[in-house]
Image (cartoon, rainbow, N blue to C red; front, top):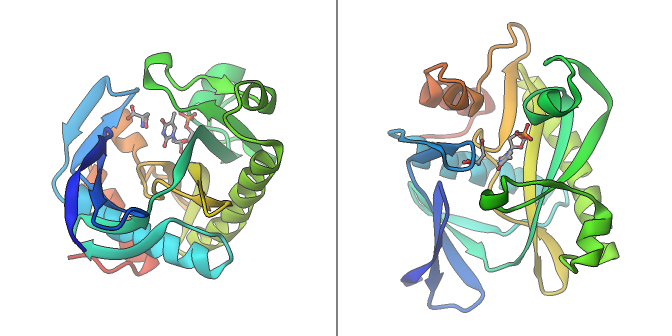
Length: 237
Ligand code: TMP
Ligand code: ASP
């Protein structure tokens, strides 16, 4: 597998072409960003941890019947993935109120959400990822009805699988964000699943173990990610 030129550089990952048209290399960098890139830093080991954590989660989801773009880990910070035609929409499920939900609806952090909520956001930093609904997705032709239904179905399925996985490791899956794309006519989970894109609290102490440690300047960001990986049995270097 030959790594070719860069296709795209996001805030925490870069994407490279390969010598195979339908495959890309994802590079998990140590860069960390919050508030649409307004707060940035470099966190030693974060790229390696997220790459290995993501591979572990994607492998599990694949076994549970969720199609994912992940193919294999290539190195500490790189993975080979399928090249998806990405849908510019973020799917968020929340089991417990936190983050933007609290600001938008004036509810207290920590409120149990039963049933969990499902929200859609447009992936657009300049517009600060505005909340959208299914009608916007249809009118702007970002995805078809059947694709929206499938993204929603898969997002709830991921919630069921991962809620149980994290709970067994003494962690509450508070919320998370997924991105999907198309591959061979199928809706496939893309991007990544790591503590950068979800909220995880210790189930006993409710200590934050995710990127909120960075957003809120709580410190111990990489240590928390490592602890989560350790509890799940993810092998790190
Ligand atoms: P929010 O509370 O800021 O709306 O975030 C909900 C979840 O989605 C949280 O786990 C963080 C994740 N998320 C991202 O991964 N990337 C983003 O750009 C945003 C806005 C949220
Ligand atoms: N991922 C977004 C950013 O880096 C938002 C966030 O996670 O807070 O700015």
